[in-house]
Image (cartoon, rainbow, N blue to C red; front, top):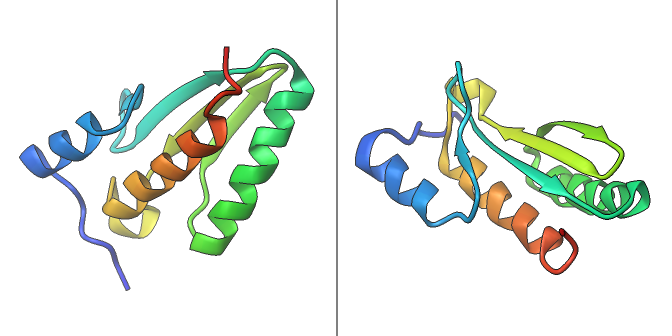
Length: 101
């Protein structure tokens, strides 16, 4: 089933409810960068996010360099940002809470 893309006011409200997430430049996606004190803390965070994403069957695009993790979310089957991305963003933030510097 294809998720409905969030656009306009609906999208702005959903994004405003998230802390630190922003529109990705040059594409229909949202993005956030997390900074951890060590590679191990960043990798532990990524492992927890991977397990949550697998349960949702919705997977982030991300890169990791030492303690920095850059996350981009989009629902590819819908061609942009959906409520599924917002839900995963909230779950990601929950796993980062108290860990980022």
